[in-house]
Image 1 (cartoon, rainbow, N blue to C red):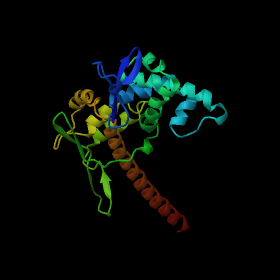
Image 2: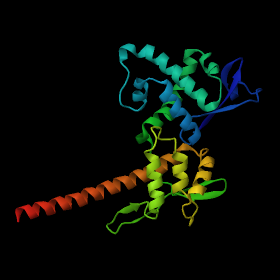
Image 3: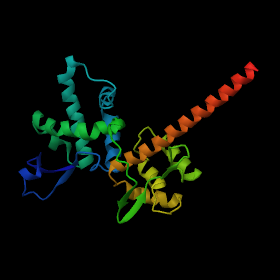
Image 4: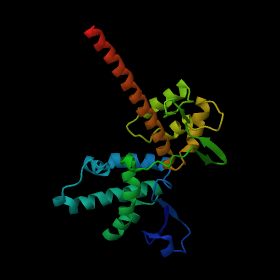
Length: 250
């Protein structure tokens, strides 16, 4: 979902309100229209310019004090206007020159549908996609196979190299979106294509224009894999502990 905006007399207007202007800007309003590159810019902007309190609010960790809410709302509105300018290329003044109620009309939706889901990943409901098409090529997400115990084993066909590369990148930056295009390029390949680091790095530049929801799909695939590993580790450690206890009793 995107909203087409124009600038008229230095202020943002919707395209419907100002049809004679040819210069248009698309404001993404969900994770299907926000690109990975825009997500990177947005996350960096919020982390650099917003207070820790605001970031905690977006992450669902805490809420502003009701007594200071009105003053905080003005501060937060300025942050969101800057964020919208960052991802669209619109001068921030075109947002800030609007009335406060007009600003909030844009900010409310952008915060709810774009900023908060980036900080509260759990809000996203996985679609369970198996592949995606980009520029005429179909790329497959890591496959799952039966584990022999009635469950599924995620990333079962990945090599140790691609598995390690993607995991290392996942923890290499405080910005979880910084390397996500490369992680997707490592793990999502055409059917039958083996992992190749040079190809992945070249492809990652193109993948920056992918909608960020695909990154979330890959993230949940990795999360499932990590959960499976943690579960199996717990089972094996439990078995070892029981064995040691049995030895002690004997």
